[in-house]
Length: 361
Length: 123
Image (cartoon, each protein chain N blue to C red):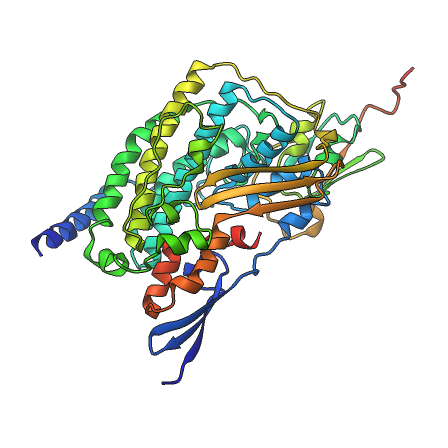
């Protein structure tokens, strides 16, 4: 049988951006998969070498526009570490609350988009309805819905308000999640398309550098939040499921939203216990990192994200490098799609939660 | 088999329930979404002291100061709000106006006059 070369993307609606997969097919069976990335390359790392740190801070939200807070937090954390700036307890609690809210909004979007890939339309609207509440709150406190630019070196820009709104939202969210689960989780069609498809062996996952929910769905309990100094004093447990397939990767994200709700309730308690906001700002015009290398990492919704800065004692970094979770997930498609059928390719690629701006940077 | 039928029924029921709820979308041109006080829309300037901080913190080089003209280049501006946050006299404000589409390129050049500083002397 002659093999057929097929381009999936770069402008396929279900690739969440501009991902191009070059597939080699034999009949309907995929024999080779070659991801082609770089359509959304903006030179995020090179740009840092020209700009000062305060100029670069608004841009890092755009690395992953669905979870911008995580990348702001990373850059802030690196610079706070280098200049040994202390964060006050209220700032820490605010940051944890916003990060987890952002994780919820990111997972909600994923649930909607994934189900859209599989042909279900209603969950998309339900998920976006709940996500809208979070984004409205972000807009209220930070000024914009996704490009927040709210964390600053040494603190947050302004104090937050209207926490009751979030408390009310957290009360209704579990019921809404039950609604999704009644439509999705045990649905016959959904199960047939996901159970046993795209099985990710934990050994392969570790070799490919997969982190985050995808790795935890393969039975490896790796969560950097557990050793994160920002999450000190919060009680939560990373969720680990062992079934390794697409369905598990869906289920783990639902459970992670429940876990995030737990963390946010604790964070709100801490915010209420520390009513005074003490920012530890520095003069933005002459931020100079001492010569040396700085590294920090965080558990982003799509896996461990980290930021590496090499400074030579000037106003802008000598080299800045981002590690993003999706980049490794795209590479995994090379392995995961081989031996699967073409009509499962979208379902498997979707289940890994790939977002392209994060891949191309 | 019966269990699967039950779940199918349950999902139809959940979707059916939503038929009777109020719509959550806005019909945009007629109804506009309300934005908060901190919203970062079209920038506005009054009372500049020409210190140049905004130029140094702007990531997109969108701000220019020429003699007594203060110019925002809206083609470059990314609405990060750095200029208004770091302005020492809070002269720059981001307004709630988010409808910036225009047919004329010249509208994208926002020019504000810097006033009241000509006659002052630093003695």
